[in-house]
Amino acid sequence: MEILILGLLLFIGLHLVPTLPALRAGMLQSLGEKRYKGMFAMLAALGLILIIVGYGRAPAGPRLFNSFIGARHGAPLAMAVSFILLAAANMKGHIRAWVKHPMLLGIGIWALVHLLANGHEKATILFSAFLAFVVIDLISVLRRDSYKPFEPALKYDVIAVVAGLLLALLVMTFHRQLIGVAVVPWGV
Image (cartoon, rainbow, N blue to C red):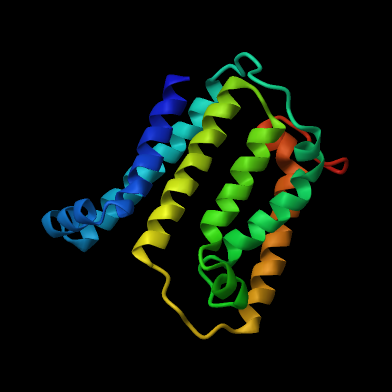
């Protein structure tokens, strides 16, 4: 469990640096933009690896609460929406223009549905941490008014929807192989 927690602290801690503009500016000034981005990417990758390895090695732990049946049944639809939002995050489409911060919303949906569908200690730690991160970061981006308007194009929405749905179907199909839990009847 310690590896999981260390990974979460590293990964989420790094991603919270932009919520503290003075800290980020100081790091950029002392390291330079290229070195800052390079270190950020390497440490974030290390954090993600620690999360994956730590989650895989950690025992499920005690069941802290019973999973919500609605979350389990609604997870495939929620995850399709989540993947579409994640795909739309860096595209100049209407989805991004309307939602403003689709990556945060997509991660929030992923974390919430997985939190409610599980109930074991390690899952609760993982998904609660990401949900807390989303809330903190969303408050920060709204406070900083970090959204930059653009002229949306429909082609990017089509790409986001198709890519998001394909990725969602792929993950659902192989979820048992990847995570150990079958989430759809057609999964392998």
